[in-house]
Every structure is written in structure tokens, then in C-alpha cells.
Image (cartoon, rainbow, N blue to C red; front, side, top):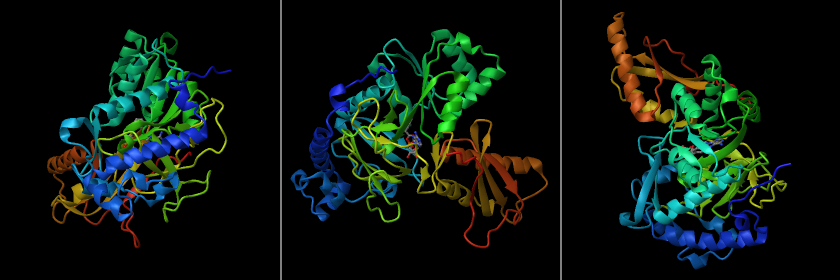
Length: 438
Ligand code: DLL
């Protein structure tokens, strides 16, 4: 029997009606923040919302226009800023569908709220200040690194800012410092397990007991496999940089669905085609409203992530509704080893190169537990030769230009003009060969 632990029990187990009243109050505040931005400053009044008082009930949320990633890009860099830059203490960004990143700005109070939300997630999995937490995910603009780092510190754990990759170094730190908890993408956790076996690391000498895994979709079977192989408990963690990143929804000790923190976010499930709300429990696209960030407020944001709400309460007693494991996306974004990549980013790079012909193909497959991206491009007319040095130099050039844009290293293959398959109907540009086990 689990003894559940709560970071903010008065919030986490709040009666539903009080929680909804709190949401309404915070929604009004967030609308006030949004009205100060250039983007919402035009759109909210056009929808009849000129002041926070025009929001009378939670149903008024539906009057707010839905925001897309392209709107964020369109308002780059500062169209969504609600305060002078002197009030901002941090920015984070993720890749957009084109070269323009989607950027969010945090005030000191925003950062404090995010940190506390993260602490709530981590503490809710049973972590305590006695834990040693190795954060094996990318730091920098990506929200996964600093997000869990801050949350871990707030819980009082000793945080090792390990960063992603380099399994040998990770194992050394686990052994040296007695790591008890790790954070990584599920793919990297599986990769660690096979490397541990390969390198003859004795699991029984490690103190590992838990892992937080997220930033990319994975199945319940994958969770079980990681748990059995590494002999740890794995907790699913969902977030999206536009909503601060991780801490949006997290599993508790019941390990059965992720609590969406409804005092911080409002979640709606909509039909991805009509954007109309779906009845409770039905599967559709998640639209999120951020109630906890003043710096760059974002309301009714299309995540493109497909899920549904649980209709039954959780064994842990928390009243915040839970989300089912995500089963896909309603757009063409690919997640490759935790990094978001849009096919359009790749197209933009290769089509801008004069040496490249008209056809290309993106192939994603599994290489052990990790994902591998191959970009096959046709050389332009008269470019392809038997001179391997020349061809290797061109492939390297394409590879470097691509990795500068998409931030991961693809394998690049150069093909003779006219040799890649041509579809008769719509072009097939992406071949995702990864098993769909969800
Ligand atoms: O991936 C934030 C994050 C960092 C979440 C660390 C969890 C852990 P983005 O780079 O903006 O932010 O990518 C967000 O990743 O829209 C989903 O498609 C996908 N995603 C994130 N977590 C999960 C998950 C971070 N647990 C996009 N299951 C989202 C399925 C996930 N997909």
C-alpha cells in the first residue's frame, strides 16, 4: 500500500468546486496579463473581451481565440511580452516549424511558480531531500534541463546537472555520487540499460530507485520494460515549452495517468478538425491555457497532442484530473530522441542548397533504443560524380547545415538525380519506421 505524499495538499486535494472557482479567478488575472500584449491586445477586444471582468464564468474561456504555433512565431520576438524586458529574468525557446523559435519569457515570480510546480511533481512521486537526482537531459534553451533541476533543488534533493548523452560519464556519476533518481527521455533510459549490460556495470551496486521519463511519447509496455530491466519505478512527465515545459502534467505514486495541475493550467479536449470541445473522457487534441506565467501569457494553445481525460478519480486523492498517455499528434511534428523536428525545417535547409536536386526523403527508424534520422537527398543535375571525396564533402556540408537548424545530427545520404522514389499522388517525404506500440 502506497503512502502518498503531497507538496501542497491544500491545493492538490482541493474540492473540485473550489478548484474551479480558483481557475476562474486565475483566468481573469491571466486575461489581464494577456491584454497588455501586442498579440492579445488586438484579438481579445475583437472577441468582446476588453477587460478581465468580461470573463464571468469558465465558459467564457471559449470566447478566447485559439492560439497556434504559427501565431507565436508571427509575434516573434516580443509580441507576446506583457511587461518591460527589465521585469524578465529568463527565456526558454523551442524549435518552430521554420527557423523561428517559439520563445517564452519568465519574470522572477513566474520562475518561482514554475519551480514550485516542478517540486510538486517530483515530491508527488515519493522523492525526498535524501535523494540524489541526476538530471540526464539537455540543459540550455530546452525546458527539461533547468525545469527539473530547479524543482529538484526546491524539494531539497542534491541535483547533479549531468546533461544528456555520454553513458560512460553518466554511469561514473551514478557510482561516485550514489544517484537514486534520474530524469531522461524513455529512449535514453533504455539505451542506458543496454550500455550497462555491455559495459558490465553491476546494477546491484547502484542505488537507483526512480526515473522521470518524458519529452517524447512512449507506451505502457516501454515503461514496464524500463522498470523491469533497470529495477526502478518510472513516472511519466508531460510538458510543452509554450506552457513552461515540464510540470504541466505528471504521474503520482499511483502511476496511472498524469495529473494536469488545474490550478496552473486549464485543459480542454477538442476535435482536431473542428476545434469544438469533446465530451468528457473522449479522445481528442489537448488545448491548454497557462494560468501561471505573466511574462508571456498564452491562452488556449493548440498542443496538437492527442489524449483524453480519465473520468474516474485517482487512488491518491488528488482532485486534479488525469490525462491518459499521449497516443500521437494531429500535425506532422516528429520527436527524435526527445527533440522536436518538423519536416518543413529539413525541407527548407535542403531546398536552399543549389547542389541538391528536387527530391528528398526523411527516414526515421530505431537504432537499438535510440531514434535515428536519415535524410536522403538527390544531387542536382550534373552534381553526382564518382569522386567520393567530393561527394563526402557535399554530404558533410548538408549534414552540418541541417544539424545547425534541427539541433540533432542526421545521417545524410546522397543519391543520383531521379533515383529516389516519386509518388504519383501526394509526395511522401517522411518514412517513420519506428514501431507504433501504443
Ligand atoms: O518536451 C518539455 C518536457 C521536458 C516534457 C522534459 C517532459 C520532460 P517541447 O520540447 O516543447 O517540451 O516538446 C513538447 O513533446 O507537445 C509532446 O508532443 C511531446 N511530449 C512531451 N512530454 C511527453 C510525454 C518538452 N510524456 C512536445 N508523452 C509535446 C508524450 C510528450 N509526448
